[in-house]
Image (cartoon, rainbow, N blue to C red; front, side, top):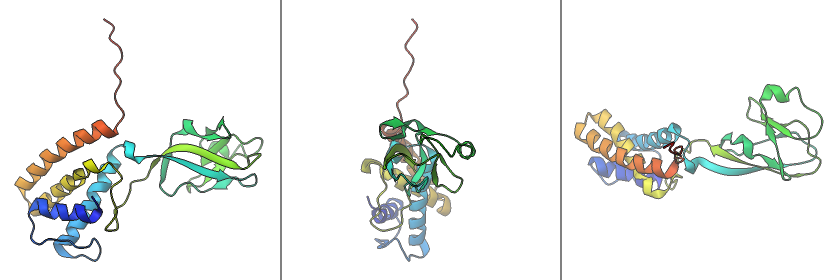
Amino acid sequence: MTFLELCQRLRQEVGAAGNGPANVVSQSGEYARFVGWTATAWRELQNERRWAFDWARGEVELTALDTEYSLPSDFDVWESETLQFAGERIEVVPWYELEKDVAGTFGRVAIAPDGVLHLNAPPANAGNLTFEYWRTPQELVNNADQPRMPSRFHLCVVYRAMMQYALYENAQEVAQQAGRNAVKMEILLMESQLPRVELPPSLA
């Protein structure tokens, strides 16, 4: 579902009057609250865990001249053991440690406090630094924006937004319904989008 469709489904689920909102921008009153609750529900859900749908592969094009580069705009944190350049593993070190090592052969990187990627030295040849990383929470802003988790779980956002509505309206029945539905749906979400726990073999 799109952001707009999620807001409309929220209105439908709580039994509010009308058939909108028709847009997620320039709303007022109850429809503005529906938009805000939906966006907040999605943001909070993403912040709770490292979901599989937030994982991504990235690359930064390096030249033989520069040691400072921008990371992807949605970069949050990377899997440090996955960095490679020209088939070689690149070491990730803390920023304060890289400051002491700014010469020699390229093989170490660090992220400065301002979010800029720094190399200990330029590579001998241009190429792509590749890595796996976790993305920052996605914001729903426009009508057509869609949560990047699998579409079969989009109702998780609606059920969470319903609980915010219930608190605002002191609607206990809505809160109970939303809570039950959210628990069921989020169990399925966790089974799908979190790493499986591998149990150690039995000693018996």
